[in-house]
Image (cartoon, rainbow, N blue to C red; front, top):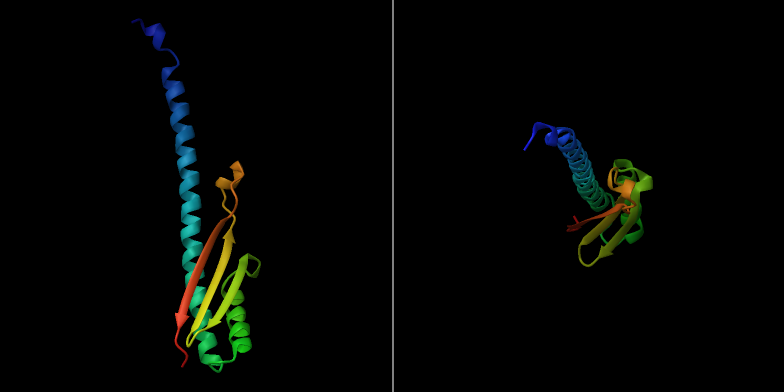
Length: 124
């Protein structure tokens, strides 16, 4: 094998590794973004449930919903909140969801990630 047969091999290998590295960094960026949003959604949903339980009478579903919605909007981007569900089954069950627009995956037409959080809390 002659040296001239190996010309450009390092450049091709470098290019392939650079593309793979960029793709992996993009995927990790999206995963990290989803982890951060998931944590914020969990915390905001729990704060909203605690505030609703403390501020409202146990059977006042309108008050519970309004207070929970107010706290969710204060702790999350209001435009990102997809849904809010309040259930009264002897305790308050608050479920919320958001759609997270992904940075890297959206370049390939991937839809936003849908994240849910659910908290059950006994009335005071």
